[in-house]
Image 1 (spheres, rainbow, N blue to C red):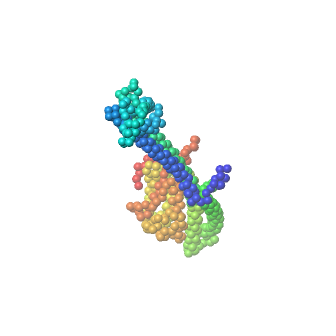
Image 2 (cartoon, rainbow, N blue to C red):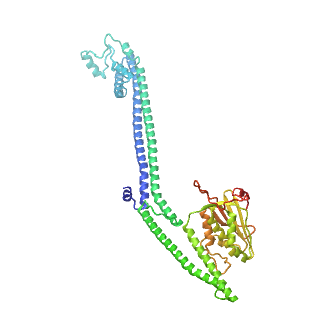
Image 3 (cartoon, one colour):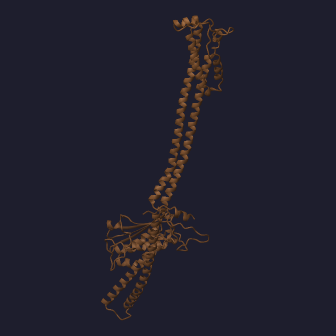
Amino acid sequence: MTTELSRRWRPRSLLQLVLLAFVVVMLPIAVLMFQAGQALSELSTLADQSARHAVEQTRRARMLSSLALQMERSARQYAVIEEEGLREIYNEKARQFGELLQEHEPLMRDDPDFRSLASRFQQLRELPRIPGETLQPADEAGAERAAEAPPVPDLSLLPPQESMSDFLARFSGFASESDAVRNATNALIDSRIADIRERADAVRARLWMQTAALVSASLMLMLFFTWLITRPIRQLERRIFGLGSGERSDTEQRIQGPAELVQLGDRLSWLSGRLNELEAQKQQFLRHMSHELKTPLASIREGTALLSDGVAGDLEPRQHEIVTLIDENGQELQTLIEQLLDYNLLQNSRRMKVSRFDVATVIQEVLAKHRLALDNKGMQVISPHHPLEWQADRERTARILDNLISNAIAYGEDGGNLTIRLASQRDWLAVEVANSGEPIAKADREHLFEAFYQGSARRKGPLKGSGIGLSVAADCARLQAGQLALVDDAELPVCFRLTLPWAERPERPGHAIPHDNDAVPEDRVTATDARNDTW
Protein backbone atom coordinates (compact mmCIF):
# COMPACT_ATOMS: atom_id res chain seq x y z
CA MET A 1 0.00 0.00 0.00
CA THR A 2 2.79 2.42 0.92
CA THR A 3 4.68 1.57 -2.24
CA GLU A 4 1.58 2.19 -4.36
CA LEU A 5 1.03 5.56 -2.67
CA SER A 6 4.66 6.54 -3.13
CA ARG A 7 4.45 5.66 -6.80
CA ARG A 8 1.20 7.58 -7.18
CA TRP A 9 2.56 10.73 -5.50
CA ARG A 10 6.07 10.48 -6.90
CA PRO A 11 7.21 13.77 -8.50
CA ARG A 12 8.15 13.58 -12.13
CA SER A 13 11.50 15.33 -11.76
CA LEU A 14 13.96 16.52 -9.16
CA LEU A 15 13.15 20.14 -10.06
CA GLN A 16 9.49 19.53 -9.35
CA LEU A 17 10.36 18.03 -5.95
CA VAL A 18 12.57 21.01 -5.10
CA LEU A 19 9.85 23.50 -6.07
CA LEU A 20 7.25 21.55 -4.09
CA ALA A 21 9.58 21.52 -1.09
CA PHE A 22 10.10 25.28 -1.38
CA VAL A 23 6.35 25.97 -1.50
CA VAL A 24 5.51 23.65 1.40
CA VAL A 25 8.38 24.94 3.57
CA MET A 26 7.38 28.57 2.90
CA LEU A 27 3.69 27.90 3.68
CA PRO A 28 4.05 28.01 7.52
CA ILE A 29 6.15 31.16 7.23
CA ALA A 30 3.45 32.76 5.04
CA VAL A 31 0.80 31.80 7.62
CA LEU A 32 2.98 33.31 10.34
CA MET A 33 3.37 36.55 8.39
CA PHE A 34 -0.40 36.73 7.78
CA GLN A 35 -1.25 36.16 11.44
CA ALA A 36 1.38 38.67 12.55
CA GLY A 37 -0.06 41.24 10.16
CA GLN A 38 -3.58 40.58 11.46
CA ALA A 39 -2.45 40.92 15.08
CA LEU A 40 -0.52 44.11 14.38
CA SER A 41 -3.48 45.58 12.49
CA GLU A 42 -5.80 44.74 15.39
CA LEU A 43 -3.44 46.29 17.92
CA SER A 44 -2.97 49.36 15.75
CA THR A 45 -6.74 49.88 15.42
CA LEU A 46 -7.26 49.37 19.13
CA ALA A 47 -4.45 51.76 20.01
CA ASP A 48 -5.81 54.39 17.61
CA GLN A 49 -9.35 54.16 19.00
CA SER A 50 -8.11 54.17 22.58
CA ALA A 51 -5.95 57.21 21.90
CA ARG A 52 -8.88 59.14 20.40
CA HIS A 53 -11.22 58.16 23.24
CA ALA A 54 -8.58 59.03 25.82
CA VAL A 55 -8.03 62.47 24.32
CA GLU A 56 -11.78 63.12 24.07
CA GLN A 57 -12.52 61.91 27.59
CA THR A 58 -9.59 63.84 29.06
CA ARG A 59 -10.72 67.02 27.29
CA ARG A 60 -14.30 66.53 28.50
CA ALA A 61 -13.17 65.96 32.10
CA ARG A 62 -11.06 69.13 31.99
CA MET A 63 -13.98 71.07 30.48
CA LEU A 64 -16.21 69.89 33.32
CA SER A 65 -13.73 71.16 35.89
CA SER A 66 -13.35 74.47 34.02
CA LEU A 67 -17.12 74.96 33.60
CA ALA A 68 -17.69 74.20 37.27
CA LEU A 69 -15.37 77.04 38.21
CA GLN A 70 -16.93 79.37 35.62
CA MET A 71 -20.45 78.58 36.83
CA GLU A 72 -19.51 79.32 40.42
CA ARG A 73 -17.77 82.54 39.39
CA SER A 74 -20.76 83.68 37.27
CA ALA A 75 -23.19 82.93 40.12
CA ARG A 76 -21.18 84.91 42.63
CA GLN A 77 -20.77 87.83 40.21
CA TYR A 78 -24.53 87.84 39.61
CA ALA A 79 -25.18 87.84 43.33
CA VAL A 80 -23.04 90.97 43.65
CA ILE A 81 -23.80 92.93 40.47
CA GLU A 82 -27.33 91.64 39.83
CA GLU A 83 -27.10 91.92 36.03
CA GLU A 84 -29.25 89.74 33.82
CA GLY A 85 -26.34 89.13 31.41
CA LEU A 86 -24.39 87.34 34.12
CA ARG A 87 -27.38 85.10 34.76
CA GLU A 88 -27.60 84.24 31.06
CA ILE A 89 -23.89 83.46 31.02
CA TYR A 90 -24.41 81.16 33.99
CA ASN A 91 -27.27 79.37 32.32
CA GLU A 92 -25.22 78.90 29.12
CA LYS A 93 -22.34 77.43 31.13
CA ALA A 94 -24.81 75.20 32.96
CA ARG A 95 -26.26 74.01 29.66
CA GLN A 96 -22.76 73.15 28.36
CA PHE A 97 -21.95 71.46 31.66
CA GLY A 98 -25.13 69.37 31.38
CA GLU A 99 -24.31 68.30 27.82
CA LEU A 100 -20.76 67.29 28.76
CA LEU A 101 -22.08 65.46 31.81
CA GLN A 102 -24.58 63.59 29.63
CA GLU A 103 -21.81 62.64 27.20
CA HIS A 104 -19.63 61.54 30.11
CA GLU A 105 -22.34 59.42 31.71
CA PRO A 106 -21.77 56.17 29.69
CA LEU A 107 -18.13 56.18 30.81
CA MET A 108 -18.61 57.01 34.51
CA ARG A 109 -22.15 55.82 35.21
CA ASP A 110 -21.13 53.60 38.13
CA ASP A 111 -18.62 56.01 39.66
CA PRO A 112 -19.82 57.49 43.01
CA ASP A 113 -18.06 60.83 42.39
CA PHE A 114 -19.84 61.16 39.08
CA ARG A 115 -23.25 60.38 40.61
CA SER A 116 -22.62 62.91 43.36
CA LEU A 117 -21.60 65.52 40.77
CA ALA A 118 -24.72 64.81 38.68
CA SER A 119 -26.94 65.14 41.74
CA ARG A 120 -25.37 68.47 42.74
CA PHE A 121 -25.65 69.73 39.16
CA GLN A 122 -29.41 69.12 39.23
CA GLN A 123 -29.54 71.58 42.13
CA LEU A 124 -27.40 74.15 40.25
CA ARG A 125 -28.87 73.68 36.80
CA GLU A 126 -30.51 77.19 36.66
CA LEU A 127 -29.52 80.39 38.43
CA PRO A 128 -32.67 82.10 39.86
CA ARG A 129 -33.30 85.86 39.78
CA ILE A 130 -32.85 88.02 42.81
CA PRO A 131 -36.17 89.56 44.13
CA GLY A 132 -36.64 93.19 43.09
CA GLU A 133 -34.60 92.80 39.92
CA THR A 134 -36.19 94.25 36.83
CA LEU A 135 -35.50 93.41 33.27
CA GLN A 136 -33.69 96.12 31.33
CA PRO A 137 -35.30 96.88 27.93
CA ALA A 138 -33.13 96.86 24.92
CA ASP A 139 -34.32 100.37 23.59
CA GLU A 140 -36.62 103.39 24.44
CA ALA A 141 -39.67 101.93 22.68
CA GLY A 142 -39.27 98.84 24.65
CA ALA A 143 -39.00 100.91 27.83
CA GLU A 144 -42.26 102.74 27.05
CA ARG A 145 -44.10 99.48 26.36
CA ALA A 146 -42.70 98.05 29.56
CA ALA A 147 -43.93 101.05 31.49
CA GLU A 148 -47.45 100.78 30.01
CA ALA A 149 -47.68 96.97 30.39
CA PRO A 150 -49.14 95.47 33.57
CA PRO A 151 -46.63 93.87 35.90
CA VAL A 152 -45.92 90.13 35.31
CA PRO A 153 -44.78 87.97 38.17
CA ASP A 154 -41.25 86.45 37.75
CA LEU A 155 -41.43 82.72 38.33
CA SER A 156 -37.63 82.33 38.52
CA LEU A 157 -37.35 84.45 41.62
CA LEU A 158 -35.98 82.81 44.72
CA PRO A 159 -38.64 81.50 47.04
CA PRO A 160 -39.07 83.54 50.16
CA GLN A 161 -37.57 80.94 52.38
CA GLU A 162 -34.34 80.59 50.28
CA SER A 163 -31.73 83.32 49.94
CA MET A 164 -28.99 83.75 47.36
CA SER A 165 -26.41 82.81 49.95
CA ASP A 166 -28.10 79.44 50.36
CA PHE A 167 -27.92 78.88 46.59
CA LEU A 168 -24.27 79.86 46.52
CA ALA A 169 -23.64 77.48 49.40
CA ARG A 170 -24.59 74.63 47.07
CA PHE A 171 -21.35 75.30 45.15
CA SER A 172 -19.40 74.03 48.15
CA GLY A 173 -17.60 70.91 46.91
CA PHE A 174 -18.86 71.35 43.33
CA ALA A 175 -15.40 72.12 41.96
CA SER A 176 -13.77 69.40 44.05
CA GLU A 177 -16.31 66.85 42.80
CA SER A 178 -15.53 67.93 39.22
CA ASP A 179 -11.81 67.46 39.93
CA ALA A 180 -12.59 64.04 41.43
CA VAL A 181 -14.46 63.07 38.24
CA ARG A 182 -11.49 64.26 36.19
CA ASN A 183 -9.10 62.17 38.31
CA ALA A 184 -11.41 59.17 38.03
CA THR A 185 -11.48 59.67 34.27
CA ASN A 186 -7.69 59.73 34.18
CA ALA A 187 -7.55 56.58 36.29
CA LEU A 188 -10.02 54.87 33.96
CA ILE A 189 -7.91 55.89 30.97
CA ASP A 190 -4.78 54.55 32.70
CA SER A 191 -6.55 51.26 33.35
CA ARG A 192 -7.57 51.05 29.71
CA ILE A 193 -3.97 51.75 28.66
CA ALA A 194 -2.84 48.99 31.04
CA ASP A 195 -5.41 46.65 29.48
CA ILE A 196 -4.10 47.52 26.02
CA ARG A 197 -0.55 46.89 27.20
CA GLU A 198 -1.57 43.52 28.65
CA ARG A 199 -3.34 42.68 25.42
CA ALA A 200 -0.26 43.68 23.45
CA ASP A 201 1.86 41.46 25.69
CA ALA A 202 -0.57 38.59 25.15
CA VAL A 203 -0.47 39.14 21.40
CA ARG A 204 3.32 39.27 21.52
CA ALA A 205 3.48 36.01 23.50
CA ARG A 206 1.03 34.42 21.09
CA LEU A 207 3.10 35.59 18.13
CA TRP A 208 6.25 34.16 19.73
CA MET A 209 4.53 30.83 20.30
CA GLN A 210 3.20 30.81 16.76
CA THR A 211 6.63 31.79 15.46
CA ALA A 212 8.28 28.95 17.38
CA ALA A 213 5.65 26.44 16.27
CA LEU A 214 5.57 27.48 12.62
CA VAL A 215 9.34 27.90 12.31
CA SER A 216 9.75 24.45 13.89
CA ALA A 217 7.22 23.11 11.40
CA SER A 218 9.18 24.75 8.57
CA LEU A 219 12.41 23.22 9.86
CA MET A 220 10.79 19.79 10.14
CA LEU A 221 9.41 20.10 6.63
CA MET A 222 12.78 21.29 5.38
CA LEU A 223 14.50 18.29 6.99
CA PHE A 224 11.83 15.98 5.59
CA PHE A 225 12.19 17.28 2.04
CA THR A 226 15.97 17.30 2.40
CA TRP A 227 15.73 13.62 3.29
CA LEU A 228 13.41 13.03 0.34
CA ILE A 229 15.86 14.75 -2.01
CA THR A 230 19.08 13.26 -0.62
CA ARG A 231 17.77 9.71 -0.05
CA PRO A 232 17.71 8.68 -3.72
CA ILE A 233 21.03 10.47 -4.25
CA ARG A 234 22.59 8.50 -1.37
CA GLN A 235 21.08 5.31 -2.77
CA LEU A 236 22.60 6.08 -6.15
CA GLU A 237 25.92 6.89 -4.47
CA ARG A 238 25.92 3.55 -2.64
CA ARG A 239 24.96 1.78 -5.85
CA ILE A 240 27.81 3.46 -7.76
CA PHE A 241 30.24 2.77 -4.92
CA GLY A 242 29.19 -0.87 -4.98
CA LEU A 243 29.83 -1.03 -8.70
CA GLY A 244 33.26 0.54 -8.30
CA SER A 245 34.33 -1.60 -5.34
CA GLY A 246 33.04 -4.82 -6.83
CA GLU A 247 30.53 -5.49 -4.05
CA ARG A 248 27.54 -7.43 -5.24
CA SER A 249 24.14 -7.63 -3.59
CA ASP A 250 21.65 -10.33 -4.34
CA THR A 251 18.69 -8.09 -3.47
CA GLU A 252 19.03 -4.54 -4.74
CA GLN A 253 16.46 -2.09 -3.42
CA ARG A 254 14.66 0.03 -5.95
CA ILE A 255 15.51 3.71 -5.90
CA GLN A 256 12.72 5.72 -4.25
CA GLY A 257 12.42 9.31 -5.38
CA PRO A 258 11.70 11.39 -8.48
CA ALA A 259 10.98 9.48 -11.66
CA GLU A 260 14.20 10.57 -13.36
CA LEU A 261 16.33 9.31 -10.43
CA VAL A 262 14.36 6.06 -10.36
CA GLN A 263 15.09 5.67 -14.06
CA LEU A 264 18.76 6.36 -13.39
CA GLY A 265 18.71 3.68 -10.67
CA ASP A 266 17.19 1.21 -13.13
CA ARG A 267 19.98 1.97 -15.59
CA LEU A 268 22.56 1.42 -12.86
CA SER A 269 20.91 -1.92 -12.07
CA TRP A 270 21.15 -2.82 -15.75
CA LEU A 271 24.80 -1.74 -15.76
CA SER A 272 25.46 -3.82 -12.64
CA GLY A 273 23.92 -6.84 -14.31
CA ARG A 274 26.03 -6.33 -17.41
CA LEU A 275 29.18 -5.97 -15.31
CA ASN A 276 28.33 -9.17 -13.45
CA GLU A 277 27.87 -10.95 -16.75
CA LEU A 278 31.19 -9.64 -18.03
CA GLU A 279 32.89 -10.64 -14.78
CA ALA A 280 31.46 -14.14 -15.06
CA GLN A 281 32.64 -14.33 -18.67
CA LYS A 282 36.09 -13.15 -17.59
CA GLN A 283 36.27 -15.80 -14.88
CA GLN A 284 35.19 -18.46 -17.32
CA PHE A 285 37.75 -17.25 -19.86
CA LEU A 286 40.57 -17.31 -17.29
CA ARG A 287 39.62 -20.81 -16.14
CA HIS A 288 39.53 -22.09 -19.69
CA MET A 289 42.72 -20.24 -20.59
CA SER A 290 44.61 -21.62 -17.61
CA HIS A 291 43.49 -25.14 -18.43
CA GLU A 292 44.21 -24.80 -22.13
CA LEU A 293 47.65 -23.26 -21.49
CA LYS A 294 48.74 -25.39 -18.57
CA THR A 295 48.04 -28.69 -20.28
CA PRO A 296 50.27 -28.18 -23.37
CA LEU A 297 52.79 -26.26 -21.25
CA ALA A 298 53.10 -29.20 -18.91
CA SER A 299 53.63 -31.49 -21.88
CA ILE A 300 56.33 -29.16 -23.26
CA ARG A 301 58.15 -29.02 -19.92
CA GLU A 302 57.89 -32.77 -19.50
CA GLY A 303 59.32 -33.30 -23.00
CA THR A 304 62.20 -30.88 -22.37
CA ALA A 305 62.91 -32.65 -19.09
CA LEU A 306 63.09 -36.04 -20.89
CA LEU A 307 65.37 -34.59 -23.52
CA SER A 308 67.61 -33.06 -20.84
CA ASP A 309 67.83 -36.41 -19.05
CA GLY A 310 68.97 -38.11 -22.27
CA VAL A 311 65.99 -40.43 -22.56
CA ALA A 312 65.89 -39.90 -26.31
CA GLY A 313 69.64 -40.09 -26.57
CA ASP A 314 72.62 -37.94 -25.74
CA LEU A 315 72.39 -34.30 -26.75
CA GLU A 316 75.12 -32.18 -28.16
CA PRO A 317 76.07 -29.07 -26.13
CA ARG A 318 74.28 -26.79 -28.56
CA GLN A 319 71.15 -28.95 -28.43
CA HIS A 320 71.28 -29.11 -24.64
CA GLU A 321 71.50 -25.32 -24.51
CA ILE A 322 68.37 -24.97 -26.68
CA VAL A 323 66.45 -27.50 -24.54
CA THR A 324 67.46 -25.63 -21.37
CA LEU A 325 66.31 -22.34 -22.91
CA ILE A 326 62.93 -23.90 -23.80
CA ASP A 327 62.54 -25.27 -20.26
CA GLU A 328 63.39 -21.92 -18.65
CA ASN A 329 60.95 -20.03 -20.84
CA GLY A 330 58.24 -22.61 -20.14
CA GLN A 331 58.83 -22.21 -16.41
CA GLU A 332 58.67 -18.43 -16.77
CA LEU A 333 55.44 -18.70 -18.76
CA GLN A 334 53.95 -20.95 -16.08
CA THR A 335 54.91 -18.37 -13.45
CA LEU A 336 53.15 -15.61 -15.40
CA ILE A 337 50.02 -17.73 -15.75
CA GLU A 338 50.01 -18.44 -12.03
CA GLN A 339 50.44 -14.74 -11.24
CA LEU A 340 47.51 -13.87 -13.48
CA LEU A 341 45.35 -16.49 -11.78
CA ASP A 342 46.46 -15.28 -8.35
CA TYR A 343 45.53 -11.72 -9.29
CA ASN A 344 42.11 -12.82 -10.49
CA LEU A 345 41.58 -14.90 -7.34
CA LEU A 346 42.59 -11.96 -5.16
CA GLN A 347 40.11 -9.65 -6.89
CA ASN A 348 37.26 -12.05 -6.10
CA SER A 349 38.29 -13.21 -2.63
CA ARG A 350 38.10 -10.71 0.23
CA ARG A 351 38.12 -13.08 3.21
CA MET A 352 41.13 -13.17 5.51
CA LYS A 353 42.61 -16.24 7.18
CA VAL A 354 44.06 -14.72 10.34
CA SER A 355 46.65 -16.77 12.22
CA ARG A 356 49.67 -16.17 14.46
CA PHE A 357 53.02 -16.90 12.83
CA ASP A 358 56.71 -16.11 12.98
CA VAL A 359 57.51 -13.40 10.42
CA ALA A 360 61.21 -14.32 10.24
CA THR A 361 60.31 -17.91 9.40
CA VAL A 362 58.04 -16.76 6.57
CA ILE A 363 60.86 -14.56 5.20
CA GLN A 364 63.30 -17.49 5.23
CA GLU A 365 60.75 -19.73 3.49
CA VAL A 366 60.23 -17.18 0.71
CA LEU A 367 64.01 -16.70 0.32
CA ALA A 368 64.44 -20.47 0.06
CA LYS A 369 62.09 -20.49 -2.97
CA HIS A 370 64.31 -17.92 -4.71
CA ARG A 371 67.65 -19.28 -3.56
CA LEU A 372 68.63 -20.59 -7.01
CA ALA A 373 67.74 -17.25 -8.71
CA LEU A 374 69.67 -15.35 -6.03
CA ASP A 375 72.73 -17.54 -6.55
CA ASN A 376 72.54 -17.07 -10.30
CA LYS A 377 72.40 -13.28 -9.84
CA GLY A 378 75.17 -13.39 -7.26
CA MET A 379 73.20 -11.17 -4.88
CA GLN A 380 74.21 -10.86 -1.24
CA VAL A 381 71.21 -11.34 1.06
CA ILE A 382 70.86 -9.79 4.52
CA SER A 383 67.73 -11.00 6.31
CA PRO A 384 66.49 -11.10 9.92
CA HIS A 385 66.80 -14.32 11.90
CA HIS A 386 65.39 -13.25 15.28
CA PRO A 387 61.88 -14.69 15.76
CA LEU A 388 59.00 -12.21 15.84
CA GLU A 389 55.42 -13.36 16.29
CA TRP A 390 52.63 -11.54 14.53
CA GLN A 391 48.94 -12.10 13.87
CA ALA A 392 47.77 -11.51 10.29
CA ASP A 393 46.95 -13.38 7.09
CA ARG A 394 50.01 -15.60 6.67
CA GLU A 395 49.30 -16.59 3.08
CA ARG A 396 48.83 -13.03 1.83
CA THR A 397 51.84 -11.79 3.80
CA ALA A 398 53.99 -14.49 2.19
CA ARG A 399 52.62 -13.53 -1.24
CA ILE A 400 53.60 -9.88 -0.65
CA LEU A 401 57.13 -10.85 0.33
CA ASP A 402 57.41 -13.28 -2.58
CA ASN A 403 56.44 -10.55 -5.09
CA LEU A 404 58.81 -8.01 -3.52
CA ILE A 405 61.77 -10.41 -3.49
CA SER A 406 60.96 -11.58 -7.02
CA ASN A 407 60.81 -7.95 -8.14
CA ALA A 408 64.17 -7.22 -6.47
CA ILE A 409 65.78 -10.19 -8.22
CA ALA A 410 64.29 -9.24 -11.60
CA TYR A 411 65.29 -5.55 -11.50
CA GLY A 412 68.32 -5.62 -9.17
CA GLU A 413 71.86 -5.48 -10.40
CA ASP A 414 73.97 -8.62 -10.76
CA GLY A 415 76.17 -9.15 -7.74
CA GLY A 416 74.21 -6.51 -5.81
CA ASN A 417 72.66 -6.52 -2.38
CA LEU A 418 69.23 -7.54 -1.12
CA THR A 419 68.41 -6.40 2.41
CA ILE A 420 65.30 -7.33 4.38
CA ARG A 421 64.60 -5.46 7.62
CA LEU A 422 62.02 -6.40 10.23
CA ALA A 423 60.68 -4.40 13.17
CA SER A 424 57.51 -3.70 15.12
CA GLN A 425 56.24 -0.57 16.78
CA ARG A 426 53.25 -0.85 19.10
CA ASP A 427 50.53 -2.61 17.06
CA TRP A 428 52.21 -2.24 13.66
CA LEU A 429 54.64 -4.51 11.87
CA ALA A 430 57.10 -3.08 9.35
CA VAL A 431 59.04 -5.09 6.77
CA GLU A 432 61.43 -3.40 4.34
CA VAL A 433 62.77 -5.05 1.20
CA ALA A 434 65.61 -3.01 -0.35
CA ASN A 435 67.95 -3.82 -3.21
CA SER A 436 70.72 -2.22 -5.18
CA GLY A 437 70.30 -1.36 -8.83
CA GLU A 438 68.75 1.33 -10.96
CA PRO A 439 66.45 3.72 -9.01
CA ILE A 440 62.80 3.84 -9.99
CA ALA A 441 62.01 6.89 -12.13
CA LYS A 442 59.81 9.59 -10.64
CA ALA A 443 57.32 9.26 -13.50
CA ASP A 444 56.80 5.59 -12.61
CA ARG A 445 56.27 6.10 -8.87
CA GLU A 446 52.65 7.29 -9.17
CA HIS A 447 51.62 4.28 -11.29
CA LEU A 448 53.86 1.70 -9.66
CA PHE A 449 51.04 -0.27 -7.98
CA GLU A 450 48.58 -0.13 -10.87
CA ALA A 451 47.69 -3.44 -12.49
CA PHE A 452 49.49 -4.26 -15.77
CA TYR A 453 51.57 -1.08 -15.64
CA GLN A 454 54.99 -1.43 -17.26
CA GLY A 455 57.59 1.06 -16.08
CA SER A 456 60.54 2.48 -17.97
CA ALA A 457 62.95 0.01 -16.31
CA ARG A 458 63.10 -3.32 -18.13
CA ARG A 459 63.05 -6.69 -16.44
CA LYS A 460 66.33 -8.60 -16.64
CA GLY A 461 65.67 -12.03 -18.13
CA PRO A 462 64.47 -13.79 -21.25
CA LEU A 463 60.82 -12.78 -20.69
CA LYS A 464 59.43 -9.44 -19.52
CA GLY A 465 57.07 -9.27 -16.54
CA SER A 466 53.28 -9.10 -16.52
CA GLY A 467 53.03 -5.88 -14.51
CA ILE A 468 50.71 -7.31 -11.86
CA GLY A 469 53.21 -8.42 -9.19
CA LEU A 470 53.31 -5.15 -7.26
CA SER A 471 49.57 -4.65 -7.81
CA VAL A 472 48.86 -8.03 -6.21
CA ALA A 473 51.18 -7.19 -3.33
CA ALA A 474 49.54 -3.80 -2.72
CA ASP A 475 46.04 -5.38 -2.80
CA CYS A 476 47.12 -8.02 -0.29
CA ALA A 477 48.38 -5.26 2.02
CA ARG A 478 45.17 -3.24 1.70
CA LEU A 479 43.01 -6.28 2.44
CA GLN A 480 44.83 -6.54 5.77
CA ALA A 481 44.32 -2.81 6.50
CA GLY A 482 48.02 -2.27 5.81
CA GLN A 483 50.03 -0.38 3.25
CA LEU A 484 52.77 -1.05 0.73
CA ALA A 485 54.79 1.97 -0.31
CA LEU A 486 58.02 2.92 -2.06
CA VAL A 487 60.21 4.85 0.40
CA ASP A 488 63.59 6.52 0.31
CA ASP A 489 66.46 4.62 1.86
CA ALA A 490 69.87 5.94 2.88
CA GLU A 491 71.74 2.75 1.90
CA LEU A 492 70.03 1.31 -1.19
CA PRO A 493 68.33 3.05 -4.14
CA VAL A 494 65.15 0.93 -4.15
CA CYS A 495 63.24 0.20 -0.96
CA PHE A 496 59.67 -1.04 -0.43
CA ARG A 497 58.09 -0.81 3.02
CA LEU A 498 55.23 -3.07 4.10
CA THR A 499 53.25 -2.04 7.20
CA LEU A 500 50.66 -4.39 8.69
CA PRO A 501 48.48 -3.95 11.79
CA TRP A 502 47.92 -6.61 14.41
CA ALA A 503 44.82 -8.36 13.10
CA GLU A 504 42.31 -8.88 15.91
CA ARG A 505 40.20 -11.99 15.72
CA PRO A 506 37.72 -13.04 18.42
CA GLU A 507 38.55 -16.43 19.86
CA ARG A 508 35.76 -18.94 20.11
CA PRO A 509 35.49 -20.92 23.36
CA GLY A 510 37.69 -24.00 23.20
CA HIS A 511 39.44 -22.87 20.00
CA ALA A 512 42.83 -21.16 20.06
CA ILE A 513 44.32 -19.09 17.30
CA PRO A 514 46.26 -21.42 15.00
CA HIS A 515 50.00 -21.30 15.44
CA ASP A 516 52.72 -22.34 13.02
CA ASN A 517 54.90 -24.00 15.67
CA ASP A 518 53.74 -26.07 18.61
CA ALA A 519 56.85 -25.46 20.68
CA VAL A 520 58.16 -21.96 21.26
CA PRO A 521 61.91 -21.62 21.88
CA GLU A 522 63.04 -19.73 24.95
CA ASP A 523 64.82 -17.06 22.88
CA ARG A 524 61.72 -16.26 20.75
CA VAL A 525 60.97 -12.54 20.59
CA THR A 526 57.26 -11.74 20.77
CA ALA A 527 55.60 -8.75 19.20
CA THR A 528 55.54 -6.89 22.51
CA ASP A 529 59.24 -7.48 23.13
CA ALA A 530 60.18 -6.47 19.61
CA ARG A 531 58.58 -3.01 19.83
CA ASN A 532 61.90 -1.53 20.87
CA ASP A 533 63.42 -2.45 17.50
CA THR A 534 64.12 0.44 15.15
CA TRP A 535 64.15 0.73 11.41
